[in-house]
Length: 547
Image 1 (tube, rainbow, N blue to C red):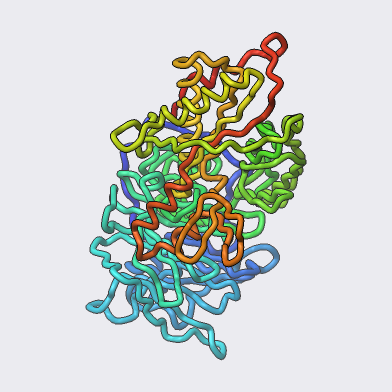
Image 2: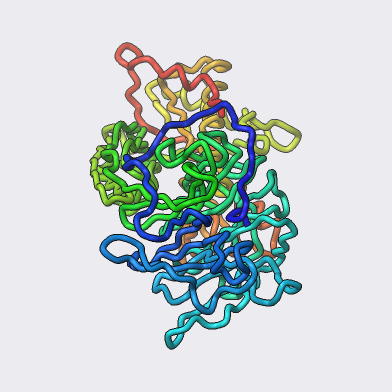
């Protein structure tokens, strides 16, 4: 329990002064919470900030005398926390501390120290406020949680469905690492390591999760900074084990000594520090003003073909205070969006201080071709798995299919074709897009470099997995061409969901349906190619994309 210790640490030769908002100069909390003779730490606020719970160590009024830590509570009067008293019913002769409070303030989460010294499980318990008193704490079962070391701590989210744990557990890379357990319908999950981005070879302690559960504050001596231990923050990147690189809160908050137990209430932050004394006190700083929220730049990529959906918009957010809420006019909530068709798109971004900014972007597309594109079916073109080399073996000769295209171009010298490559629906969008573009370029390079076709007559397009193939099903048979007689025939788009559903127990069918999606097609764009007026072909198509 790091509340009890003050560690000597060799300071790393590194200082980070960046701050993500402007803060007033820290002062010791006004009122009677801080004392000369004891340690005060771990501030926990009630929802309306009228009560401040905190941990006091080395106080003769504690149940275990001055060797133990106890829970105290102070009321806010005239903007000061005064009349602090030891919390009735939840303190004993062992180490007591609050590690979370419910949104309504009627549930307190505590270090589980209520079974007697021999039975202390180094876990977490909960007490409820009923009829004016706190009930006897009840242990919370977190499967597989076994804490062997002396140092550990918890933080329970306001929504009471996430517990962040600081301890030396399975897979720890340092003295204490951060783990997470989440509440499900069947109970709490086993703790999982929160990743090496926020866990160092030192210790990570005193976690604090924001109410929207996407920003984590914690103290560490493993990332360098101002002193013994500094307070950092990191933003969730998706899963509970994926976080941004920790950012030091800077030398307004962090001192050359021990700083930890960050908490926030309204426009004030509080934390514990021994910067001015041997003992720790609770410090407070006021958020003066957040940096202005700006969408500083953007990259807009237009659609490459008439009626296409390969447009994209990448925005860059500067200033503001994260986490950010992003809402696009088409309902998406990602910062960067893709697979867009022609149109106007507006993004509205709001930061945690309710600063809001909106920007609009226009996606354009080429003009509709004079000749209505006609699809030309090719004999099969195949590629090696996860590659773009044209496959040629005893069973298939992909170049034969491309020679068919070559013959068409020779027979009709005014023909301009779009050559598109498609992947099956498995895998990520980005990888499939990359693979399909290189496959289209492999066909393009064969026709241009090996067969001598004018490159201006072919447009290679990678469609990725964005356009699943349409087939027709009669009974158990799948047809690749639409039959003249449609009675009893079902038209089907081979999406990943459909393939997975119908081929759960038929591996061969699974392979066949995915193979149907892996295809190369040709569309007629024009029959009016003029070598004297046609602009040069884009040279990039003769080079494969690099990942």
